[in-house]
Image 1: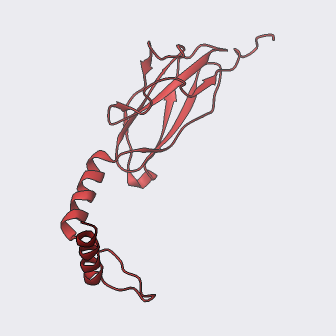
Image 2 (image 1 turned 90 degrees about the vertical axis):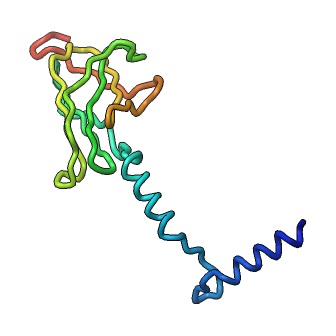
Length: 145
Protein backbone atom coordinates (compact mmCIF):
# COMPACT_ATOMS: atom_id res chain seq x y z
CA UNK A 1 0.00 0.00 0.00
CA UNK A 2 2.79 2.37 0.94
CA UNK A 3 4.70 1.69 -2.27
CA UNK A 4 1.59 2.27 -4.41
CA UNK A 5 1.10 5.69 -2.78
CA UNK A 6 4.78 6.53 -3.22
CA UNK A 7 4.59 5.48 -6.88
CA UNK A 8 1.50 7.65 -7.45
CA UNK A 9 3.15 10.66 -5.82
CA UNK A 10 6.31 10.13 -7.84
CA UNK A 11 4.30 9.97 -11.08
CA UNK A 12 2.34 13.10 -10.16
CA UNK A 13 5.52 15.02 -9.32
CA UNK A 14 7.19 13.99 -12.56
CA UNK A 15 4.32 15.51 -14.56
CA UNK A 16 4.33 18.88 -12.77
CA UNK A 17 6.26 21.75 -14.33
CA UNK A 18 9.65 22.49 -12.79
CA UNK A 19 10.52 25.85 -11.29
CA UNK A 20 13.89 27.53 -11.77
CA UNK A 21 15.04 26.29 -8.36
CA UNK A 22 14.22 22.71 -9.28
CA UNK A 23 11.07 22.42 -7.18
CA UNK A 24 7.72 21.52 -8.65
CA UNK A 25 4.63 23.71 -8.91
CA UNK A 26 1.03 22.64 -9.09
CA UNK A 27 -1.08 24.08 -11.88
CA UNK A 28 -4.86 24.15 -11.30
CA UNK A 29 -6.98 23.14 -14.26
CA UNK A 30 -8.79 26.13 -15.76
CA UNK A 31 -12.20 24.65 -14.87
CA UNK A 32 -11.36 24.66 -11.15
CA UNK A 33 -10.18 28.25 -11.35
CA UNK A 34 -13.39 29.37 -13.07
CA UNK A 35 -15.50 27.50 -10.51
CA UNK A 36 -13.58 29.16 -7.67
CA UNK A 37 -14.03 32.61 -9.18
CA UNK A 38 -17.75 32.04 -9.73
CA UNK A 39 -18.34 30.85 -6.17
CA UNK A 40 -16.18 33.64 -4.76
CA UNK A 41 -18.06 36.31 -6.64
CA UNK A 42 -21.48 35.12 -5.52
CA UNK A 43 -20.78 33.95 -1.98
CA UNK A 44 -17.65 35.86 -1.15
CA UNK A 45 -19.00 39.31 -0.35
CA UNK A 46 -17.37 40.09 2.93
CA UNK A 47 -16.97 43.07 5.15
CA UNK A 48 -13.32 44.09 5.00
CA UNK A 49 -13.53 47.16 7.26
CA UNK A 50 -15.99 48.31 9.86
CA UNK A 51 -18.09 49.10 11.49
CA UNK A 52 -16.15 52.26 12.31
CA UNK A 53 -18.25 54.90 14.05
CA UNK A 54 -17.61 58.62 13.70
CA UNK A 55 -19.21 62.08 13.79
CA UNK A 56 -21.11 61.09 16.92
CA UNK A 57 -23.37 63.78 18.41
CA UNK A 58 -26.12 63.64 21.01
CA UNK A 59 -28.57 62.27 18.41
CA UNK A 60 -26.62 61.12 15.33
CA UNK A 61 -23.66 58.97 14.29
CA UNK A 62 -22.06 57.81 11.05
CA UNK A 63 -21.05 54.19 10.48
CA UNK A 64 -18.31 53.41 7.93
CA UNK A 65 -18.38 50.01 6.18
CA UNK A 66 -16.26 48.55 3.39
CA UNK A 67 -17.14 45.41 1.46
CA UNK A 68 -14.87 43.25 -0.68
CA UNK A 69 -16.99 43.88 -3.78
CA UNK A 70 -20.37 45.23 -4.87
CA UNK A 71 -22.82 44.49 -2.06
CA UNK A 72 -25.92 45.83 -0.36
CA UNK A 73 -25.03 47.04 3.14
CA UNK A 74 -27.03 48.23 6.14
CA UNK A 75 -26.66 48.34 9.91
CA UNK A 76 -28.80 46.82 12.63
CA UNK A 77 -28.55 49.00 15.72
CA UNK A 78 -30.17 49.32 19.11
CA UNK A 79 -29.67 49.83 22.83
CA UNK A 80 -30.09 46.15 23.71
CA UNK A 81 -26.62 44.54 24.11
CA UNK A 82 -28.01 41.31 22.60
CA UNK A 83 -29.73 43.16 19.73
CA UNK A 84 -32.91 41.22 20.44
CA UNK A 85 -34.75 44.41 19.50
CA UNK A 86 -33.16 46.69 16.93
CA UNK A 87 -33.71 49.17 14.14
CA UNK A 88 -32.30 48.79 10.65
CA UNK A 89 -30.68 51.65 8.76
CA UNK A 90 -31.40 52.38 5.14
CA UNK A 91 -29.70 49.94 2.74
CA UNK A 92 -27.05 51.11 0.30
CA UNK A 93 -25.16 49.47 -2.55
CA UNK A 94 -21.38 49.71 -2.59
CA UNK A 95 -19.54 50.33 -5.85
CA UNK A 96 -16.01 50.30 -7.20
CA UNK A 97 -16.13 54.08 -7.72
CA UNK A 98 -16.17 54.49 -3.93
CA UNK A 99 -13.83 51.56 -3.22
CA UNK A 100 -16.86 49.54 -2.05
CA UNK A 101 -17.23 51.82 0.98
CA UNK A 102 -20.35 53.38 2.42
CA UNK A 103 -20.97 55.77 5.30
CA UNK A 104 -24.38 55.10 6.82
CA UNK A 105 -25.96 57.86 8.87
CA UNK A 106 -27.95 57.02 11.99
CA UNK A 107 -30.29 59.64 13.40
CA UNK A 108 -32.90 59.99 16.11
CA UNK A 109 -30.55 58.55 18.72
CA UNK A 110 -30.96 59.21 22.45
CA UNK A 111 -28.32 61.34 24.24
CA UNK A 112 -25.87 59.54 26.56
CA UNK A 113 -26.98 56.12 25.39
CA UNK A 114 -24.89 53.11 24.37
CA UNK A 115 -25.81 51.68 20.98
CA UNK A 116 -24.83 48.25 19.64
CA UNK A 117 -24.22 47.55 15.94
CA UNK A 118 -24.37 44.58 13.61
CA UNK A 119 -23.46 45.20 9.94
CA UNK A 120 -25.64 43.47 7.35
CA UNK A 121 -24.18 42.53 3.95
CA UNK A 122 -26.57 41.30 1.25
CA UNK A 123 -29.22 40.69 3.90
CA UNK A 124 -26.95 38.59 6.11
CA UNK A 125 -25.90 39.91 9.55
CA UNK A 126 -22.12 39.65 9.94
CA UNK A 127 -22.18 38.74 13.63
CA UNK A 128 -24.29 35.94 15.00
CA UNK A 129 -24.02 36.63 18.73
CA UNK A 130 -22.83 39.21 21.28
CA UNK A 131 -20.63 40.96 22.03
CA UNK A 132 -21.56 43.48 19.34
CA UNK A 133 -19.50 46.60 18.55
CA UNK A 134 -20.83 49.63 20.41
CA UNK A 135 -20.58 53.39 20.79
CA UNK A 136 -22.09 55.96 23.13
CA UNK A 137 -23.83 59.17 22.09
CA UNK A 138 -22.80 62.48 23.63
CA UNK A 139 -24.84 64.40 26.22
CA UNK A 140 -27.46 66.82 24.94
CA UNK A 141 -25.95 70.13 23.84
CA UNK A 142 -26.03 72.61 26.74
CA UNK A 143 -26.72 70.02 29.42
CA UNK A 144 -24.83 70.27 32.69
CA UNK A 145 -22.63 67.37 33.64
